[in-house]
Image 1 (cartoon, rainbow, N blue to C red):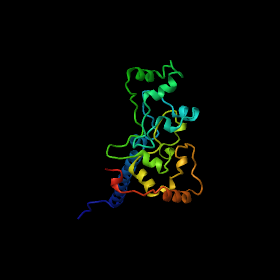
Image 2 (image 1 turned 120 degrees about the horizontal axis):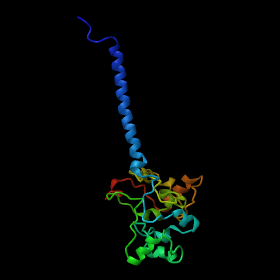
Image 3 (image 1 turned 180 degrees about the vertical axis):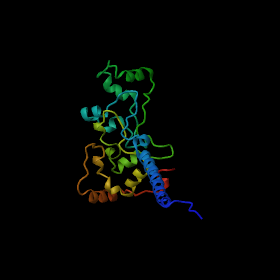
Image 4 (image 1 turned 90 degrees about the vertical axis):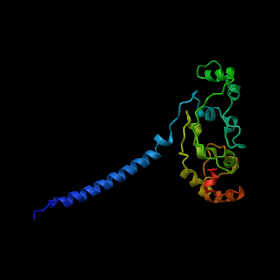
Length: 216
């Protein structure tokens, strides 16, 4: 009986199997990269805003503290956005007729709030409390990055669950003295783990990783 397959068929079959495995592996790798990339996470992508507000100018050049605009960050789950009245405190006299600040004057005249686009926008099924993190020694820059270097605001961290859990599992790596929470230029010391363990104990920080901590 004649052979149904040539001797080269074995080689072709082996090569085909390897090619399929490589294709499947590459597909998963590309999907993973896309899922973690800026297309999905919006990391380092500044969304369009009604006003070209520069944190770099207001924080670094003018020296404004985070709490001047985000007034409820120490006492509320929501950091708070400044009302138009806060903006007009300065801009009724500074750049009072500039085209750039016209939306602020329009908001003040109409009484309608400025519709900012949230940069750090968590899903509705996630509970996050700013005040508890601030009062437990987690600095603004730990999550929001060096906002004093951002002409336009963007995310520097994904805010994905695994990113949050990494901190919750080992808070001693990220905690800082409460007096340094709003210090945008704070640098973790060489003995951070030693200091962190001390602060975790002093501030009664719990390593909460249960689902109900955030998904309520």
